[in-house]
Amino acid sequence: MTRPDIITFGCRLNIYESEVLRGQLESQQDETATDTVIFNTCAVTGEAVRQARQSIRRTRRERPDAKIIVTGCAAQIDPEQFAGMAEVDRVVGNSHKAEASAFAFDTLQPKVVSSDIMAVKETAGHLVSGFADKARAFVEIQNGCNHRCTFCIIPYGRGNSRSVPAGAVIEQIKLLVSQGYREVVLTGVDLTSYGTDLPGRPQLGTLVQRILKLVPDLPRLRISSIDSIEVDDALIDAITGDMRVMPHLHLSLQAGDDMILKRMKRRHRREDAIAFCGRVHAARPDIVFGADIIAGFPTETDAMFENSLRLVEDCRLTYLHVFPYSAREGTPAARMPQVPMPVRKERAKALRALGHAQKQAYFTSRIGARERVLIERAENGGMRGHSESFAPVELPGHMAVGNVIDVDIISVNDRGLVGIAAG
Image (cartoon, rainbow, N blue to C red):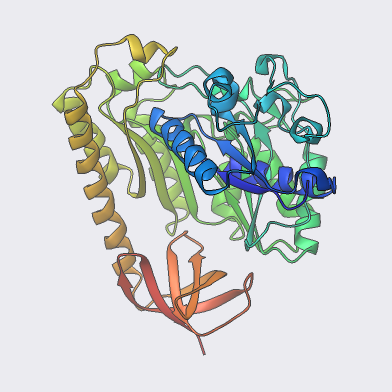
């Protein structure tokens, strides 16, 4: 299989795993199935699954002779749903995603290649030498989740929490830095549970501090979504004390009302989130927070939703990832009294409007500032990248993708900051 097309849905971990899979399959050099499309699916919402199915059907119409393989969380949770689609040639669960042989068509494989994800006990520290057409690299340090939030189906697609040993993580980052990558993103399903399954139970903060010490040539280390209630002191020390850790944290908050958080089976309360953001901001004033928030969770009243709206300002949230609640069969929340869908959508709209206002206010505050920007791609005759706080930046001219440069911000638009390379 040579140069498979991989269409990725969902999280940063899926992005990483798609690159690992691409490298594994390209190394096979199997010429018997050159026209192959792999869908790496997401199951976080019913809409994500619907979009994957729609894309599969469209691809079959456009490429009638291609081999279509479906993998990822949706394929693991409900393989028969995809196996029943006439457009699909094979379904590979997350339990077999790391096995290149499961994607080959020169063997007598069944249509569905999947097994019990809960039986998977380890996460391999896959090494990759590059990421196609990307300036930043993602490194998987953890997979799976031991928590059982009432709305979430993902543990059944990813299994229980398991961690990559620190030595393998550091070697991978060293390899990526040697390949010219200037920014590495640590990713996983439940990052702050890192190490609970390893000897000595090292925490995420310990790993981050070891990376910073043992890979001194890494300019930018970014941490993806975290659960603030599980953050250890060593991680806060690294975030607030080493400027190579990017000043942007995405928090898994989900709601701003204590009763809803309890019914979600979250482990934090409203005041915990506010206290965490306040502590980090006090120690590192340039920190910028993003957060996931669900609108219209079952039993949510107008007053409860107002608490989520107020949390945006109370936690100084800048980037919001808003989901209208989507019931997933098999989860406890799907059996709770549901908020009418029009109400869910209206609340999601209100949250997104507030998020847009927060983001634009932050962008406006950066006019006249100088930002360090990772150049990621050419676009519309200029270049695009992200600042340390993950603000999108566009600027004129041509420069090498992957470089980190100083940019003077001169204006904003709906897409982010606009700047010019500093003289």
